[in-house]
Length: 74
Image 1 (cartoon, rainbow, N blue to C red):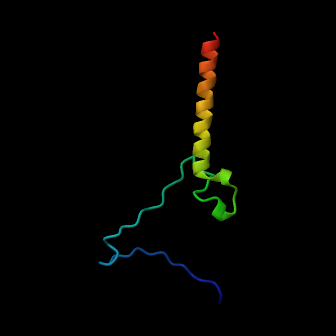
Image 2 (spheres, rainbow, N blue to C red):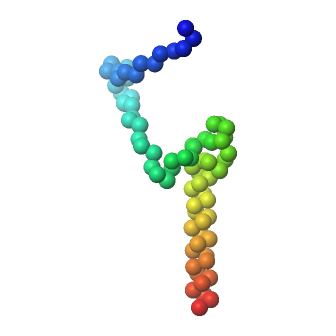
Image 3 (cartoon, helix red, strand yellow):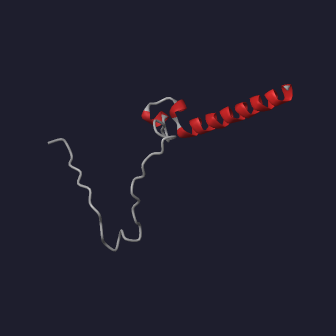
């Protein structure tokens, strides 16, 4: 039998009580489909959360610059 069986449990003993566990959080819509470390999972860097965040920032700056240019042109 090469497989392993995993049985989740909640520990209630003095060794672990000072280190409470955190429940899993639902991924927000803006982060779904992105990875914290995409390269380690064999995915392109563009699928990284930080890459997307930086791209959004660049996109917002470009939109702002276009809006300023349009106002200045009038």
